Length: 236
Ligand code: MN
Image (cartoon, rainbow, N blue to C red; front, side):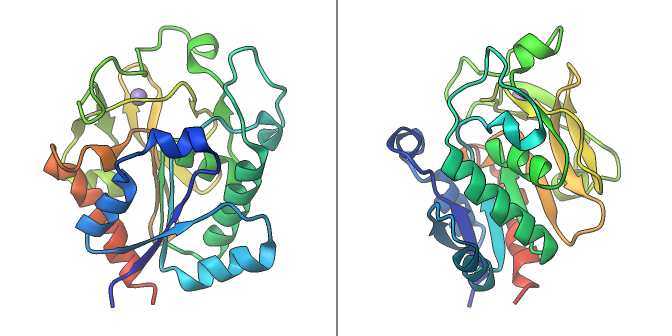
């Protein structure tokens, strides 16, 4: 038996087409986990069943989160939102947190995770934060686009055995107020939060970049998936 990792599936055609190479599935598999896609389903009993079945939860990338979920009105630069997916993933994340289940949250996932845990996000960093770098990279998907600094003593720094990394970047939203019980684990040079981690759960990490599409060309990113799958293996 290998740890079963639930991977949230996109809800709509456009998002499915965003990930044609199944990067998440490949990365979990390369790291020794068994991937299982979790389709959007807004039914609490079935969400519980998903979580009972899985050993770890991977919250994937995708479109923007409706600001209604963190008490804001939509700003001009908000992107497309998909209410059913928001409802599903927020419920899934909340329940996974209360079960102390290992979670790896990627891109949109870090935003879902932070909101589910009581924090909030910038709807659009370019209009809400001054002097930000270009976080929508103008290079192929696996290419390391900007640097990040890992917080000393963070779980993330321990996983990578490094104080800094270069990562890819495909986001216009980002974590603003970090949820209670979490801390910043990495920032870009403009101060944008690039990773958060829980201070009291077993393994709950959110990253703003897309390590799953870097693992083939830049092997060190596999370490994150290996640590996640390992933590999920302790959750049988
Ligand atoms: Mn970035």
